[in-house]
Length: 232
Image 1: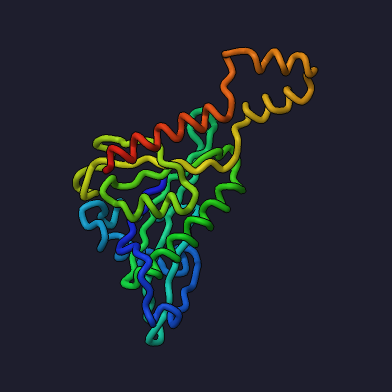
Image 2: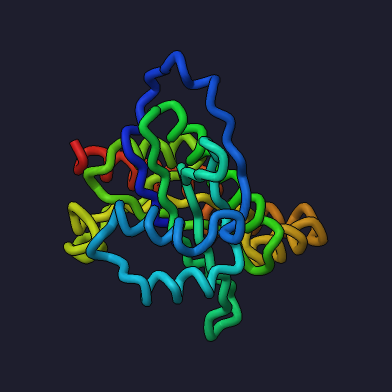
């Protein structure tokens, strides 16, 4: 499952007018195809035409939008997620997500992205067979990478030539991971350990074939440090 997040001007600067704007959270139907297409097409004019975006829009069974109305019936979109949940050949659920947050006020962009992603994570927790979320962010999008880390994602690796050049400013991506729950196999292992005797537990701990949680954390920290050094 992957998320593509494109944020603009994600800084912590505040504005006097920040508290004056009230956002509405809804679905794709609340804003409609025409407005959503214009919203995404402005950000990625070479990535979408009306036909390709129509397919993404129609297939989206999970969607979140952030908008507000002004001047009577005029509506402005500030952020949107279009997500399609599918099952692969192994009956593992995947989620194709297209996410865009764009706002002139930087503090709004941070809050919008945070609320959209939190809603998506809560939705994923309710779906079956979803263990973790992988986020792929442009390697030059430092604000986006830091945003995901702030949301609890762990940086994993650098992927060369991940994004098509016509869609992204850079083709390289940073892969981050958010773990929703432990895998089924890990749960079974945990349950079996409770049922065995203390002597067998001791023997298992002495066996070099099992990795301790601390070793896994160490490997993740090492991988993260390597990626950080590469970025620097």
